[in-house]
Image (cartoon, rainbow, N blue to C red):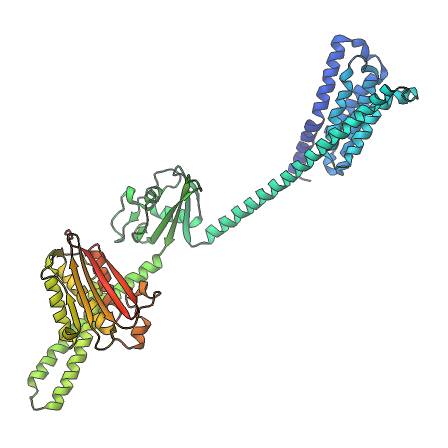
Length: 538
């Protein structure tokens, strides 16, 4: 047995003796003091000396013997010896100190409370021995009813006391077992939660109601170190937290943790943590946790490492921009030489003229695709707002689309004021309107009208384009603005395009501080471009 185990066993033994035997010893010491101060001659009887000796003997046994290695029932020897000592003391002291028999309450309670239920029989037998001891010495039975009642009084009382103590003990044991089970379940849950939090590929942080750190998983600690955030004390401000451009430091009051503790929504894109060469991209979400009565318990902050997605998006943007610029240069040359061929081809060469027309149409289609890619690549460029007549801009956009699609003018039904002045980026808005018109023409049923409605009030400009044709399924609607996304309908109908037109529209709306509404169902689809009437210069 190790030294630590031995020390633990000794502590258990001493604690048991103090809890069970010490109250009885204190009662006996009080008796000793009472005799010494009032009637010292009562120390003379032999049974009194034997009684005090038995108390001392039982106390030494309780402290010295290794009860922890024996069966629990063996410890009942100690209260049994105590009862024998009480019988000796009561025999010679009861006439002077009538309360001596009351010392029996201590071993009775110990037996009933500290051992199995059947120990209560030992308590009853012990109390019966205490009251009958004088009669055993005299070898005579009680001769009066009063003597019999005195003989049976303590045993009867011990039954009641023992039952109450036993029931309290059982209830306490059940409560202790339930508490132990609940504590163990809580510990198991804590271990499981810690494992789950450290398994999840996200940083999870919990702050208490006062804004102090209550817990964080390993991912959160790593991200905090990258951002230079000291999580031990507020304010939780880092010196290596940068904006989406990976260069501009984010002010302390606008950093993720501080905003989360203020209860703000964290839905404004990517932040970069770390020094150049070891940066990671993160997005965050936060939620305040409250009790049912609304009392704040704390704040939970979740930070996701999206570095790979950010790098993939950057590569996609670079690819889009590079391909569009690389294609535009040769296409410009092809169209230039096509013009020269047309000039050199005689009007009587009908066949050659037909071939040239096919080449020009196909080249124009390819150039349109290049322009789409260029527009998508440049959709994040700063705005250049200025005075714009949106009604005139709409007329010009319809005219530009009419030049590409022959029946556009005949199919387009326009409802617009004569003039609609606004302060917007005219070039970006014109491109967005053309994309809405082309999108409606591509996906409308042949020969059906395209409804265009322009409305302007003091604060907003709203332009809607509606066509008749296949509906856009609800699950597809959130994705129609994603770059290169094409609906199953577009693929099945072999509609030309890269899936960039609506991306340009959404980017234009967002850049102006507006948004795009989509309503599709019942054979019609309507896109509404909703913009503020005036946009301040960047």
